[in-house]
Image 1 (cartoon, helix red, strand yellow):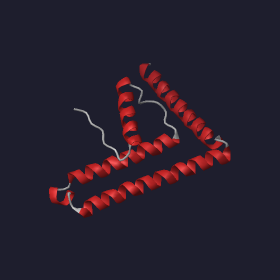
Image 2: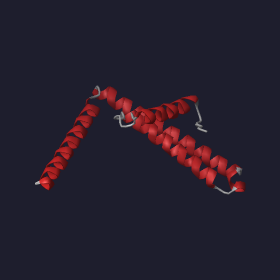
Image 3: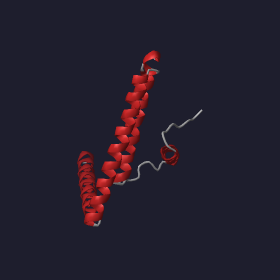
Image 4: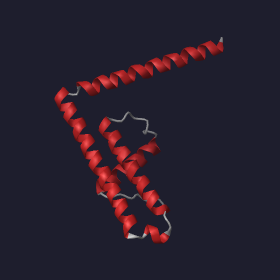
Length: 126
């Protein structure tokens, strides 16, 4: 049986889409900065849930644990909103040029790494 948990409908939809993409082998897509922040947020919430469920029964059911978990979720959501707002503001202020330069630099580094690996491979064949 497969199930998805989430605080909101949108969170569950994202998890289902990510799962479906993993079946198609599409998970290797490049993430936008906002998508990366959203995934990190989901991962943090999942970790909070795992920690809460790992606690012994009486502790897991206690109001303290429920409150701490809820506070963790709220802090994660607040941080996500602030980071996304900051990314949006930066993109608006620079018309996306900063993020484009970062992506170009990333692509350049990946190309250089791939080139270095290919050269090393060719050397090993000689």
